[in-house]
Structure formats: structure tokens, C-alpha cells
Image 1 (cartoon, rainbow, N blue to C red):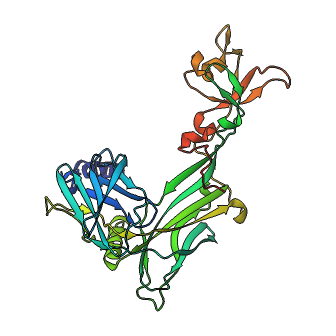
Image 2: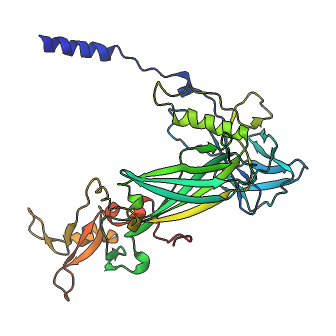
Length: 392
């Protein structure tokens, strides 16, 4: 009887539940998002434009293409940016006059957007980037200081690259018709993968007696991560901020990264310095700064770290034995499994990649061991087998 009562209570509980879609999920608003820095030196200026999407939308990327974007000085000198990818606008080094102020001008869909004029604020050099070993992995940090005490607010982001090995190394490759020995140029057991920071990192020396930032956390890497199985590199970029820009990035960090529990701060309004001139009440997300960016790159090799065994692939990778003449249970003839599973131009329908030859040494192979592309070809995992130009 107790069990029956429990079942009835559960049914009543779920039957009384109704889906609730807050207005923000279906709001028709689509607001401009501006990302980037007006780079004053010889480095390229890259500005990314996109529009917000509703929480329930299928796509999370909504780039703005076909816009007219330019940097404008307070002396009415224009520096146009060209679209180089959907939503990405860039220009080679502008080599701006540090004594002038600059703003960003954007025209899209007959709407005009302008940022406030900002002074050029160059980042001091990064003193060093280092790492500490913990029981659970690595903590990567940076150090910097400004001897002129002009810069007291900072932001950092990074791009990381690492060597990735496929679980199974292949010595053979099919050209669609025939299995051949794999050449060095066809090597797919070692790749390089890259990623960019997805969190906001800011810090300030304004309340310190000296304009020094030490052991500033950049990112953490788990000991089981494939990133540090072989060799890892991180390029840290440092930006100088004004006090207003620092407040903007702090609020944005609070609103996007610290909303997971009742103890986190309540959302606050994010006030950037970009405005829609044609629709003054329309919100615009972003803060445009101007200045030179400083960078520092380090490499970390597995020999510098404790032995941390990587997590095995999930699901596990297995090798199949595929033969030119295989007897299949329930049939009276032979089946060419190499054509059926490896040589895709000969009718392979569930393509596998040959790994090693089967048979007696010195004799023609009678078949090949093989596995699925995700276990053999590292480029399937969004990597590249082309060595990055900066790799040591």
C-alpha cells in the first residue's frame, strides 16, 4: 500500500509540472556585440562583430557580415578595416599617433554605431609566464609591472596549442582502390590542436603600493588532460585598461561566469562605451580600447612534469582483422573485407583505416588490421598534422 501511495504521489507531482519559458528566452531583441582592440602599433587590428541570440536558439554564433568598419581619430583621419571572415574585420598595423584619441565606427543594416574616443594606453611588457605543479595538474600564471605607474588595470587572454596523438598509429593508407605504405606527408598519428581562452581574466595594482602584478592566474590544466601528454605551448596576451574598461570587464565576468549559485553576486548592468547613434535606446555590448598589446609564449614538455597517465579513450579503440579472403559464418564463399571496409572506391560502406599488414614477413599481405578514423586519424579530432610556424 505504501508503494502504491508513493507511485500516485510521483504521478501527481509530474502531472502538475508545467514548462516555464521566461520572456528572456523568446525575446526578439538581437543586440550588436563588438569584440576587439584598436591596436596602435605594428600588430593587426582585429574587430569581431556578432549579434546576441536567444537562449533557446539552435545556433550560438551569429556573425555580422557586410558591415562598414573603420577606426577614426579625433583629427578626422579614417582607417578602414576589411572583412576577412564572416563577422571579422581587420587591418594591418595602423601605427597610430599615441598623442591622439581614437574611436570605432560601424555601419550595418542602415544603423550606425560609434564608440567613445579613447586615449592610447600601451601595455607594459609581460615580465614572465610560468607554471606551478599541483596535485591535480598545472596552474599557469603571469607577472608584469609598469615602472611608469601609468597602467594599473589589466586584462589577459591566451591561445594554447598542444601535440595530440591518435590512440592507434597507422603505417598504411588506402587511396580508395589500393592499400599502400603511408608516407611521411600522410602521417596522421601526431597533430597539433589549438584553443583560445573562454574566461575573462582581469587584475589591478591600483590598491597596491607598487604597480606590480605577480602570480596572476591565467589558466589551469588537469593532470589527465591530453594537452600535457607530450608538449604544450601557451601564448599569453596582455592588455592595458582604463578604470572604466576594467569595471566593464569585471561586470561582464561577474554576469557570465559567476551566476551558478545563490551565493554569487546578482547580475549588474554592463555599461560599455559603444552606442547606437540611429537608435539611442538600443543596447550595444562591448568596450573598445586602444593601445599596443604585449605577448609572451612558453613551452611545457612532459619531461618537466610528473608522470600523469592520460585517460583512456571513451569508447575504447579496438583493432579489427580484415582479410582479402575471409570466410564469413553462414556463407559458402569468400568475402573481400579489405574492399568492404578499407578501399572506399571498391564499395567500402563503413570505412576503416588500415594500421598494419597481416601475414608472414616477406610475403604479400593477406589483409590488414584496421580501426575507425577517430582512433587512427588525429585530424578527425579538429587537429592539424602541419607543424605550427612557432613550434619549437
